[in-house]
Length: 183
Image 1 (cartoon, one colour):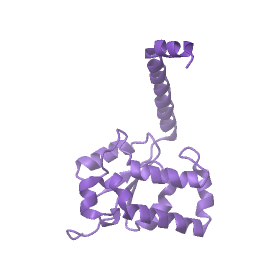
Image 2 (tube, one colour):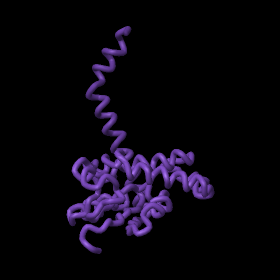
Image 3 (tube, rainbow, N blue to C red):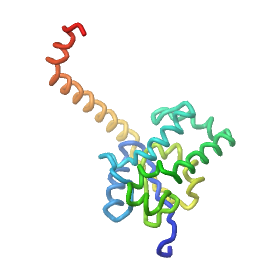
Image 4 (cartoon, one colour):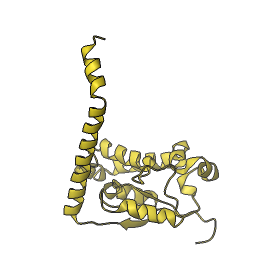
């Protein structure tokens, strides 16, 4: 690829808890731009929000994506979704992914001239739409044993519940105080 040439992204695909975060961190350390101000799970909020929009618009969610088949069966719906995404990726909202410096340099994710990627487990079900926008994209699909993924999700949920109980215990006195007051 010639220097300064527009680059297609690497799109990371894989279930939650399958190793996509580890791979994203490795790519970032190797110099691949994976988004500006990422959370610990390395999921680009900009793309996650758009994937959630796609899922919810079709009546689904990340853990119930079956309804995407209705969107994919509607050629006009697919075209409308792709055009909406194209618009969002080409205008000011992409600042959230690019950050201020890259936004001023590129103004659109379609103009990025450096290696770049994004990770979002929802890409697993929305990939047909992204590949219409980025036909030259490289897809990396990480697969982990389904039982191990389910166990990891269960463990994360359980740990989250325990953390919530501990947080509640820290503020229990405040809740009791407020519950006794008539506001």
